[in-house]
Length: 527
Image (cartoon, rainbow, N blue to C red):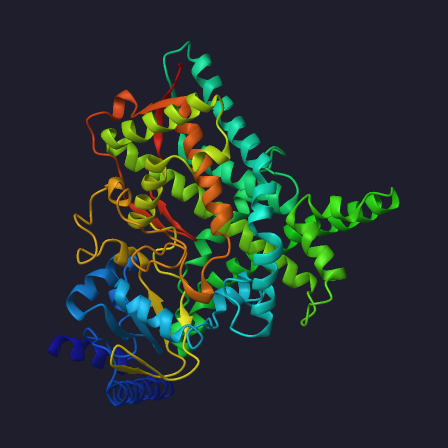
């Protein structure tokens, strides 16, 4: 400590009197802020859940690391399934068990139905005017109603079945072509890149009317990549407002605004094209219902013009925000889930054989693979559930915010506290799951657990009023694509990778992605 003061003294000695005053003023304000923060924290800790040690100003931010879901799981083993953190100046409750999650959703769903305001969501999501991030209120009720009744209903999801079948068929043909060009010696494919394109093409055709990967620019892919990285960027000013200038200094906010402008221009051009086409179609006497059935943009435009039940006018900005939800969440969730499932099956060849034998048995008996057949594939659906358990697309469910004081598990939680449910930790909780770290799909053959919000030990899409409305569309795409890949090809690691452990490390994005691409060898299956 003495050498530190010596260096500081020499440094101050070389400064002008005015500079010394400035530095002393900053030092004084910092000390006062430290005292205030510590006093405020001490006063509020009474009645709150347990907390790990914290630092002045930072609070518990230093505990998070690059993979917060893993860091928070470790903290929960020491502090319990419900713990209180102060992330800078933001009071936060972290939930890491099914029992506490169920208690919070079943008894406090309305009080926890809102979302915290965020500079990231304000910039990237049109001021949080989408469905996933909008605060609790009249607009959110309306936007969710539109999604549930018009955009993502069972009937609507089924109507897009032909798109899923066409795009998956194109993927199968592409892999087969690679095999043929290699003279039947096996085709080594970057399955990760192929799955990203597949998911993006399906979402773009269903939501926006056509895909963009064939135009030579892959604009949709580029925008999605930038968006995914920036969505999980931590802004210092979010947690320590007095350091908000740092986010401008580093250029983070500038890059976000550039991405937001690119996305806005992308969606604006798509909507304009639809408005023109819709007008032309009406001029030629085409039925409005026919136009409405083509994609989600037409549906939203027709709702904007003709839905008398709308209490809050649906603006062009609202339409773009809802489309962004579909575009980003749909693409990332679908391709990530398929990628993790294939990786786990490659790691566990016995499970691969069980699933593949079932898929081929069902399809061969029917004569053709269809979406209706997928529901009969118990082993395949068990493998998907097991993947959701180990690799939930969003490991830390989108934070909620309490709108009033609540009593939770004996603790008094004040209003305006953030709530984070660690779905990743819940899926690996040894108190809930036997051999929790192992990939064991058969556990779901005898265990009646689904992922639609009623079983809190498996909640990759959330639960309660804030559950993701796109479960039906997402799971239909995942299951059909997996069934097709497993039916048409035998999969293995390339020769150069055999005998080496498969890299299963993670990287944060909009979803929890596999850090390294999944490179596999595919050989066509013949009856």
